[in-house]
Amino acid sequence: MLSNGYILSNRYRIDSIAGKGGLSVVYRAYDLEANDALRAVKEISKHCPEIIQSATQESQLIKELYERDKFNFFPNIIQRIETDEFLYIVMDYIDGTSMQKLLADGAFPPNLTIEYAKDICSVIQFIHDYGKIYSDMKPDNLMVINGITSVSLNKGKRSGTLKLIDFGAVVQMESGIPVQYTPEYAAPEQFRAKRLDVRTDIFNIGATLYHMITGRKPLPVADESKNLRKSSERFVFDSSNRNINEYLKKVILRCVSDDPSKRYKTCTDLYHALEKTEHQYHVKLTVFSAFVTLFSTSLCLFSYLQCTRHENLNYERLMMTAEKSASYTEKTKAYKNAIQIRKDCTDAYFGLIDAYKSDVSFQEKEAYELTKLITSNAELLKENSDYELLAFETGKLYWYYYDYGTSENDDNNTTRITSSTEWFAEALGGNLKNISEQKYQMAEVYYNIGKFHSDIQKLVIEGDDTDVYQDYWNSINNMTEFIENSHTETEIVLLETYKLAISSLETYSYKFSSFALYDEQMALYSKVKNAVDNIITTTEKTEKIKQNIINRYSAAERMIEKAYGGKK
Image (tube, rainbow, N blue to C red):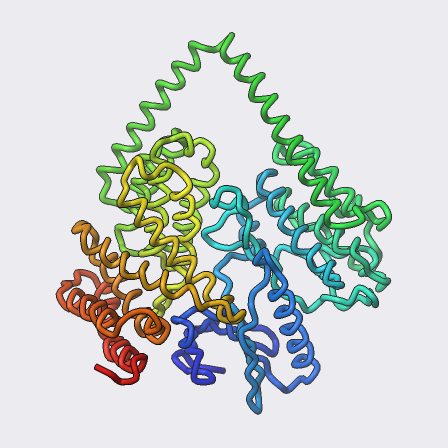
């Protein structure tokens, strides 16, 4: 087992253990050759040759799928490393949450279930087009990417909402020979060890959707006596549950038919059925809302006005409680309750963002809460003139404060930056110029830097990175200039900005040297060094960041000198 701080293959610095299996361990590590990008390193013991062969084949399949994937559904396999005792498979670290873990809090609403279902159909159809059958679809094998919702914030652009993991059960379409399955989501033909086809995946998807919409797993495919259960026994819907959408229910029941010929023939067919279901669901909601509005207007206008007045008073009371409270728990609870009363008013959202900043640490749970509040109320918020500013401030919160999965030695630059990119894209999509020209320009710079960090690895692999470094160089300089000229930023914002700048010089000096003069790189280096040396830190966290930057001075200066052939 590798210890924390160990550097594997002179490249991957081990940070912590992310998970353990029977003959394998997964580590969280930093890629020293890619700006400390987060990686997952899977260590597999060579004591079992069959496991090694299976893991090698699985990693090769993932790599092939990743290289052909335009929708970012698969992690990238970076490298395979072998020693006498172990095989190490290095891949992208997935900054997300297992769908199984999210379902522990209860069922998803119909609209979210449908959105996730369409993504699942897209990725499984992609696998089918590649000539494979996935054969083990379940919530455990789906990662929901943190900071991105099912309906992307980037003006309807859908990319990378989910990532599919665990390809150990994939089979060739030609053979259709069952490998393994999970009893709760399995089709009858898997239990009977019969030939599989694409309709087996359709069944598994339907079983997964059942779990998502009801909040509970289906019954296993067979009982304790190894007798096959009928789908009518396994997939039972509670008629009193208002969360159950009748249209979606019909789609699910068709997916999980015991007779494969009665299921949808392809994932594309299922996708179209989900689209139709989505449309019917929205029409039903619209008609119902119109009826309720008409009825309420004609019979309950006075009560409505009284209720509105009461809600406004409650909202103001909660806002006052939040603003005056010295307790973090009481403050955040009051802001969240205020949002539930006035979902379209941005004041409570801004207050919550400030509260999350108070300890200079934006935690995973806080990120989930804030993202859920904003995205679930996005339609109402977009009517507010402050919506783009809210997106901008949320982006900055992720950029400078996000502490997802961090440990004592974690810089976490890439995770924070990429998590914020979609928020800046949303800010740029509106009329932010009418609020602040400077913030609009800053959002552009943040977005461009975020896109660079999201795309650079793939561009390097494809040999298509030549033209991106000059824009990145300009963005880094613009960002440091913005921060310095604002005269209002906190010490953590200043330090994180300078840390990114010094890290970029350390990593990309050679690339910058093709268009930037030696004096220009040294000028940025000197600016960062002088500014950091003069910052007086007030917290343990900011002092740690400052020391991290100081420790990089010599490496950054050395890399600049090296980039210009040692010239001064």
